[in-house]
Image 1 (cartoon, rainbow, N blue to C red):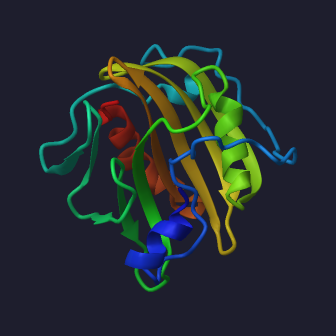
Image 2 (image 1 turned 90 degrees about the horizontal axis):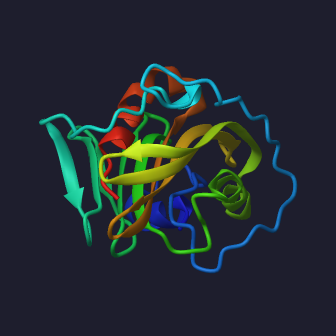
Length: 209
C-alpha cells in the first residue's frame, strides 16, 4: 500500500508518493532502473551490527511514546506528538506533517508480510517495490541481514528515492518473529534526515514483529 492511497482519505494536504511498508501480495519487480550504490556493511559497528546499522539496539520505546498493538505480537511505537493516520486493517501508520508545506516530514508504518519478500531478497525487493509504486531515482545506501530485533531477526535496507514533489530517505526492515514476519518502514524528508534519523532509529529499535 502506498501513502498516496492512505492520505487521499485522511490527510489531503500531505504530499503524494511516499511508499509505505505494505508490499502487496503478488507484488513483483517490473523495473530494472534501480541505482544500487551500496555502502559496505561488512565491518561491525558499535552495537555489534554492520556499520550502517550500529544504531539498532533493541529496547522498549520511551515511556511517553504511543504504542499501537496489532494482531499477534506486532507493535509500533511513535512519539506522542505525531498523528496516527489511516491504514489498512491489521496495519498501523503514524506521521508528522511539515508545517506550511503539506509534506510528510517523518513517517512510520508497520504491516504484516503480504508478498514474496524474504529475509534473503529484501535488499532488492524493497527498492524494486518502491519503483513499482512510482518512486524514482532509487538509491540503496546500506543493507544487512541477520539483524537482531526485540523478538526476532530481520533484514534491513536504507535507501533514498524521489517522489513527484520531493526526496525521502527510509529505513525499511523485514522482521521474522515467532508469530510470522512483518515490515516496518521509517521515512523522512532527505533534507531533514540528520535531524529525523534518531527518532526513526529509536522507533525501529523498539519494533515488535
